[in-house]
Amino acid sequence: MRGALQEKWVCSRILIVLLSIIAMQTWLRLFLSLSIMVLIAIGISQMIALTKLQAGLGLIIWISITAYLCHLIITQSLQEATQPFKSSLEPSEAVDSTGKSTVATIEDLKIQLHCLETKLKQTNEILEQTQAIKQRMESELKIGRSVQMNVLTLTLPNLLKRKDIELDAILLPAREVGGDFYDFYIFREQESYLFEQNTCCFCIGDVSGKGVPAALFMAAIKTLMKAEASTNLSPSKILSSVNQELSENNPDCMFATIFFGTLNLSTGSLLYTNAGHNFPYIRRQDGTLEKLGQKHGPAIGVIDGLTYQESRTTLSYGDILFSFTDGVTEALDPEENFFSTERLSNLLATEKIYSAKESVQLVHQAVTDFQGSAEQADDITILALQFLGHPDATNKASELVIKDELLSLLRDDWE
Image (cartoon, rainbow, N blue to C red; front, top):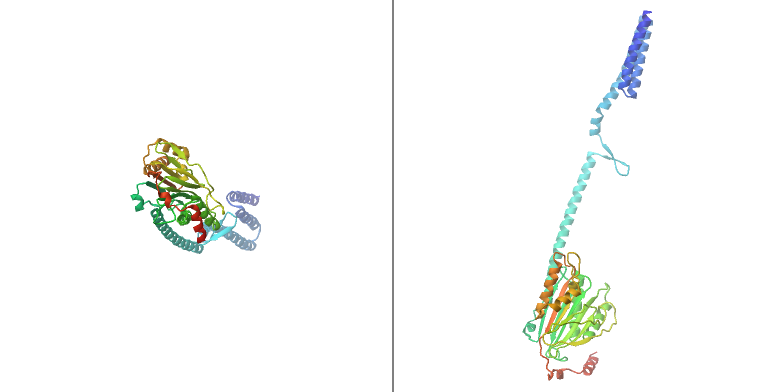
C-alpha cells in the first residue's frame, strides 16, 4: 500500500514537470522532454520492484538514455542561441524583385565596388571629353557668329558717302548663328558696263530652320544671288536662276523666303520679286503706309523649273521701304502672344519716323519690350531703305542703258 502511494506521488510530480515543459518548449523539445519523463517514470517504477542487481543495471541504462536525450536538447538550444552570430558571419541571402535569391559575400561586394569605381572613372572621362567637345563647338560657333555678323554689317564706305540712299539693318539670331540674312550691292557704270549707273540691289531672306545648317544654306543663297545680279538686274530672273540651282541639289529639302529688289537711284523706280516672304511696307513721306502685297512665287529651293514674276513701283524722296522676317511679327511675350502684323503696321503708321535708322530702332525696341523675359523664339531681321534722290525727268541716264534686245543678243553670244 505504501509503495503504491509512493508510486502515485512520483507519477504526479512527473506529470507536473511534464506539463511545465510542454508550456515552455517547442514541439521537438516537448518530444525529447516527454521521452525523458517517461523513462524516468518507468525507471523509478521498475527499480522499486526489482532486486539490487537488476536495479543497478536498469539505472545504468536509464542514465545513458537520459544523458543522450539531454545532450540532444542542449545541442539544439545552443544551435538556436548561436544562430544570429552565424548569420552575421555566413553569406546573407536576399530575394530580388524576380523572386530569385542572391547570395552576397564580402568578396562579391569588393568586386561590385571595384566595378562601380571603374564605371565612375569611365563616366568622368566621358564627361571630360564631352565638356571639351562642347567648349570647342561653342568656340567655333562664336567664331561663326562673328564672321556672319561681319559679313552682314552695313559698313560699306561707299554707302556711307552716298546722299541719295540710306540703308540700315539689324539681325539678331536666336542661336549663335542663324538662317536670316540681308544683303545689298550698288552697281555703277565702272563696275558693270552692261547696266546703268546708280542701281542698288538689296534683299532680305529667311531660311528654314535655325543654327549651323540654316547659316550654311544662307551663305550659299547670298553667293548665288550676288553672282547672278552681276549680270542680270531682273529680280525675277535672279530668283528663278537661284531656285533652279538650289532645287537640283537639295537632299535636305531646305528652302528660303526672299524679297529681292533693284532700285534705280536716279529715278526711284523699284523693281521687286517676293518669293514667299513677308510683305514689306512703304512708309511715304506724308506718313501713309502702303503694303507691297504681291507674291510672285513660293520659297526658293522647293520646286525646280519655276519662273518667278516681278512688280514695279516708285519711291519718292523720303519714302522708306521697311522689310522684315517673321521673327518680328511672330515674337512671343511671356504669355505666348504674337507681336503680330497688326501691331507692326500700327507702329509704322502712327509713330513719327524720319529715317531708315529710326524705323529699325523703333521696331527693334518695340519687339524687345514686347518679349520681356520670354526667350527669343526665332531669328529677327529688319532691313530699311530710304530713298533720298531727286528724280529728274530730263535725266540722260537712260541713254547709258543697253536695250533689252541688245542685252539678250549679247547673252546669247556668251552662251
